[in-house]
Image (cartoon, rainbow, N blue to C red; front, side):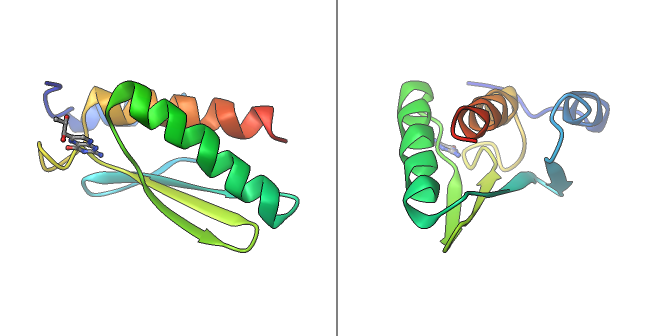
Length: 97
Ligand code: HBI
């Protein structure tokens, strides 16, 4: 299981994740899809990645805006799993642009 990341590690890795911000023990990003079906397709793509990782985001969909919130619940904060999933979310969003 991934260990909690230090503030320095989080700050450094967020620098490679444009659009992602930290709120305490979570990181989040919002994406604006062109339409609702594309927003749902993005969620579907992320669902496959999450299942592959066995690491799942909190997801909020409001029309075309999809917000992903990541944390490692079992560790009570941020781990490398959250960073890896953030990269996969970012890549999925770029594919659906
Ligand atoms: N997803 N975000 C998140 N955090 C967890 O702690 C977590 C998860 N998905 C599955 C899971 N934990 C555990 O049920 C498995 O790792 C065993």
